[in-house]
Length: 223
Image (tube, rainbow, N blue to C red; front, side, top):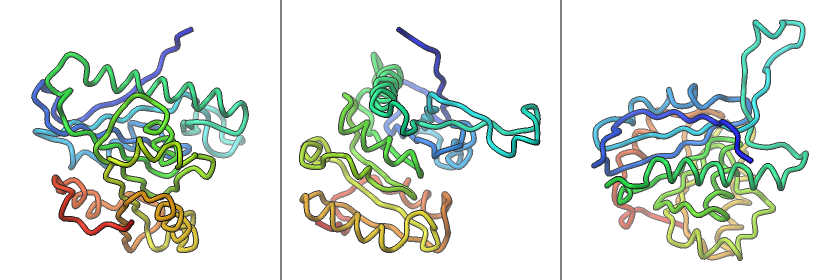
């Protein structure tokens, strides 16, 4: 069984592109809206790809009427969750293959960035799918608690992992961030933490700095 899905791209679509970013939106967002935050990052030598969650719904008050309400997307809910996870892992693998297959960009460096709900999606994709990334950025979200890091460790061991959180983020509190640090350290997975003065949002300065990091060996990391 197949179904239609969509993704957006911005930046260098040439065969020789050296840097490919897959950015995964949060709950209630649309991929096209998230991609706007990455317009300054996209350009010569870099392609940004924004897949969209397979489930869309109206956002806002029911009283507004469908025509006036915004539309958002979700990667999954608790209902039939394992099937939804399997569906989006296959979908993201298909997008990955479409973007890379048969082109010189198959040798490009790959970054996967998940924002909010997209962090869990990014983790499960790289742990359970066939795609490979050199770098994983989890922004404003956490590693899914049910992800078996013992089983996923081999897949994630060679990935440059960065956790990004706003100091006023109501979802990723200092307590949650400390728990993530402890969990990763316990499983021997090295990582970097970047904090900024802000909330549950994409900070343009931090994003620009992450985009400028081409080499990972000289960065301070926690283990």
